Length: 389
Image (cartoon, rainbow, N blue to C red; front, side, top):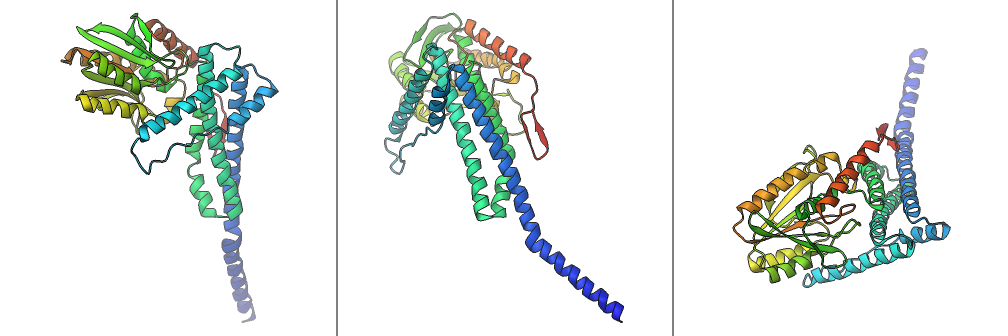
């Protein structure tokens, strides 16, 4: 009987130890494991931000003085206007957006004194990519410290689930920043690339600091072509220019060409068509185009080249580049079918590395192909045992 009683007490003791482990020790082990992974991600993001900063510093050939200026500027942010009263919100957004662009250009000119205007435009856009990466780093660090402070395991698990997406986006931002600095077309440059092909050798008019306009006869129609001015990294002032052209040139149809976000499972480089205005961003340019088109009852069409959000900010993938002939073919068909005599085609997107005619478009394509030939798989970092190259 005594041996049996000993077994009972042993079982009770083991049961209590088991309960203690799972109620007190195991949750802490899980919390420390989550914190370790979050801390690892935060440190690697800080490293990527530092690499982006060094890339900018190398481009402007700066030293410690310029490095301090860049570090300070990476904290730059924009507060967009309040939208409680939506009346006049577009003009307010436009005003703040223009001020932000001006600030970036002023700083890039201050940094890159020895650079030409196109290279300064590239530096300005590269700074925008580095700022985004720096902001992402701060968000991750914020959650790491918050989980440490609150010891909230559930919060840590919830944020840990987002780490693969954070990892993918951060690497894309670093690659995109480097591409913008060096004038390599990114995924979002496909619209301006098509527009440059369409311009061919036609005379190009510089409308303002950021936008160009060309005119061509295609299929018996007068086709007006609008794109951001290249080959520096610019987005153009599309909305205002479209508004002016519709009023002065009696535009009968507007066709926009832009990068479109794909669903997972869709093939990169797929070309789709539709009705409406394909212009991304904060919505200012799109609002102007929609407003004037509605007043004048102008048909609106678009052509989208599908890609992921990370592919849009990285150097242009070969699959995206390969969609160019198909887009030009669809565009030619649309122009031929149109009954209107004056058609406006807008190449929407970042014109980084792409000039304003077909010759420069061919040069940009060669630059993209050369980039991918030289590109070697390189392990940057690993999370959850995954090797990302």
